[in-house]
Length: 433
Image (cartoon, rainbow, N blue to C red; front, side, top):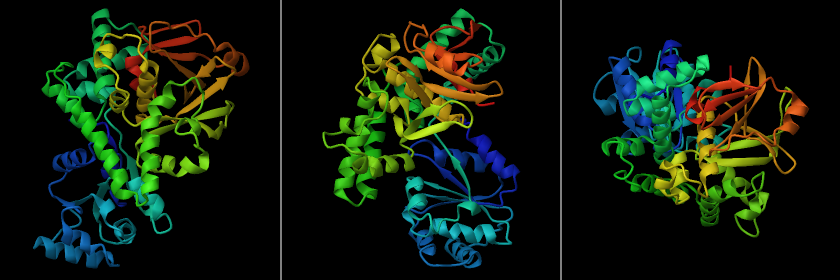
């Protein structure tokens, strides 16, 4: 499968590869597969180590050793010499090693041209816990997310449709009706299966037929996420809070409250009780935070007390909310429809490097997201159903006078009366520029 993340790997290669590259992302987003594929296609020599299974390799990093001593022991384990100038070394599952991350500084400082890529699960948690010893300035860190809708289209053999969507977006020209309907049909399938590669592969193996697609794929991945909470959080009490919080997020997304509410998790829910679990899920890349903007004028004044949380993959949200796939595919009005669609947009924007912010005023006025480009701060509203009216925005427009509003909805492309209407399947085209 082609991943857009390969561009970041290529950028690291083109930049000389002097700093070790650390790839951070949630479990099952495709980190290992993408890194291996990139190395096979771009280097004559690469070596792969899995610290979870290669005990001898893991043990090398359990003692304080300089780069030369580390490489000498790696060579002894391999039984051959390593040419650091012409070899890329991949270390996977590095979270199992207590000292691996801090050892990266020796590779970065060394005069030898080491080419190091490392990855693993829960690296955000690990980096936070060893922040004092973490040589962050000595490492290039890149974040990897589930496949966005563009990658999904490429994976299922619809690259030409993806290209056509981007062309219509740039020109703000109408998509032909047949392709427009096809894009919406595939978008709804994406809402069901999400962007985790195993789930997408299962859909491909099912000939893109949702009736043949196995729901168990996502359920098993969620079980592994929950398993990480059991395995990597020492306190049973904290683990219970993590699970309760994680499964509460879908409920938070469908309430009438504008912001996340701790007391919706349990009756005794308070910030001091759940701040730690929220940070753990953030550092694990399992959730995406969106913060309320108090002042839209630049620089943006962002509240850290008022926020919303989305899951890292829309397919997971659809599954754990027990939403019927048939309801999604037939575009029916169902309980979690708005939440699922906004979660999808949050993912697309996050993949494109767009920070997630929202704005509220009174009971009805709300801006779901923002984009900052050469035109200024542009409000983005999301419409999941057939009603594309922008009522409730008058307060924002009167107060902030945006040059236009972006509306992601079920309409085709057009620009009229200050509304740039974009089919919601084209959310991956929206970028900060």
